[in-house]
Image (cartoon, rainbow, N blue to C red; front, side, top):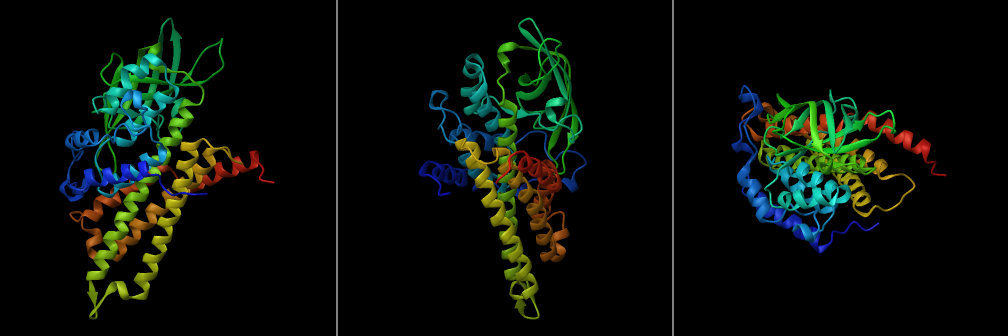
Amino acid sequence: MDFTFTEEQQAAAEAARGVFAGVEPDTVPSPSLVPGAVAEDFDRALWTRLAEADLLSLLLDAEFGGAGLDAIALCLVLRESARVLARVPLLETSAAAAAVQAYGGEELKSALLTRAGRGEAVLTVAANGRTGHDPAELAVTARQEGAEWVLDGVQTAVPWAHTADLVVVPAHTTSDTTSDRTLLAVVPRIHQGVVLGEQVSTTGERLGELRLDSVRIAARDVVEADGAWEWLRELLTTGTCALALGLGERVLAMTSEYTGKREQFGYPVATFQAVAVQAADRYIDLRAMEATLWQAAWRIASGAPGVLPASGDVAVAKIWASEGVRRVVQTAQHLHGGFGADVEYPLHRYHAWAKHLELQLGPPAAHEEALGDLLAAHPLG
């Protein structure tokens, strides 16, 4: 299997490096130093630069002003964004717009996609369910009344909910005449029956508890195609693995730089065997995270058939990303000594973001169980 990136994918990564070059993670307060969220809004100036560089429309077709690229290109850009802890809803907007393009109706695509690619419409996705432990598609019910859908339910920890223009909400239908199925509703943040509660993540960013009380959405703003939510969920998950990889790579680089300068007994601590072995182990973690990430992204991008469905590759990527990013930041804090515990040192913010990504991805044991179920359902022999 050839994982060589195409010229277009490499160009997207290079453009992202240029945009993120001026972003300094240590200019944002540590979540431990403020009583609430670290900021009311995301980085609008950076969002504008991303739009001007055409990085918000990577996955969109040319008719919507996009580059027509794939999940691999998006993951390359997300990897760069995580290295500087970019405070923008890049993953959520890109993934939601791609799902609408792939599965939505023509009227919805015409009204939304060009604006999303220009950064004029900010999207997010309610993907955590009612409690964060239950399936997101079961947290909201949808029933059809004439030309409208009526939504009721609660979604927790919706990222960028207070500043996004639209929230893509998975919901399951309730009807005596049709079988239960999952659809995606594009819900305006300011809309009758929509209430947002204040929540704060481990990163210090604002989250929202989304409450829907008989919210009426026009049928044209609902994606009813089979498989839409599953595809969006896997793209979001794979993008989160890319964020974990970029963050981990930056943290290991910070650790290498620090241990190369910090001296004990007249020698850099990086030359000590105990330090070198720990750093080498974390390097192996990152390479495994990278290999499994590109496998999952390739399966989503190509739609290539396999012995297992793409969800199997996504599960493997989640196992490595969740466990790997935790080990990388813990080792980094240990090798930084006292600086690792300093809440005013940038490493503290990386650790907070890593913990958020780890919790977002979920425990490796759960993904291993899901992978086992897939193997049982699709025997390799």
